[in-house]
Image (cartoon, rainbow, N blue to C red; front, side, top):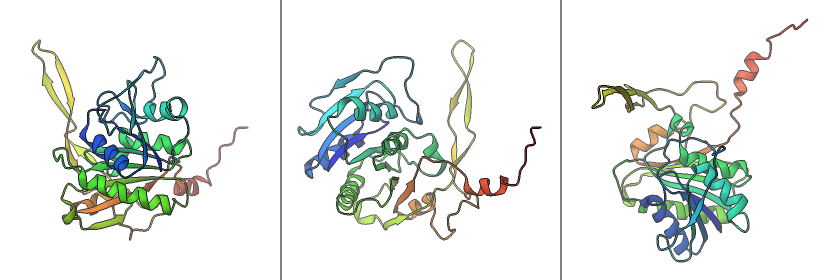
Length: 265
């Protein structure tokens, strides 16, 4: 398959090198366009008020890979690749492997997921891949599963245009309990800002906080409660796959608001 790979951790991240090299070694036609530095938690931001530059990268990835480092956001990278850098559209867009989870409501901030979603917006099925640890450096199990998933999609394409948000537990391949399809959970944080004082006596705030995972997702999303939640299955060492789309319309909300009237005369 012809693959475009990006991320939000930057060109120097071990995760993207592990993913891209493994897929190139498997015989896929791989191109990499990723940020030139870390761009985590940038969401779906686009650069509108300054130029975007892309530099060819050599001696970082497998020799068969064409690679560029872009000074824009993850979404910039995919959009630039599709409209300016690649000679033809890829069959699949992949983003990752991210250092850290993208579970629950974290996907709204995630540059990893946003890069993959840019592919979906342009009509290309996409995969976001994350290793659910900020400390583990063993990306091989996640890359191995990515190779399996790409091979499966080559034979059985997705039935509809969507993004597969994949989170892999930070354990060895032998300890992965299985693979399950999930619904999006909720990841909220407590003590979000740490108030500090700089050497000149000025107060500043550092975004931090602890994850509060025991928050149940809201009802009425037209999704069966029997479908497991992404934040739950990861604890049991399952790989989580959550199908996503960019249309955020709330069907239950439309139904409940349909009786409202706004007389304008």
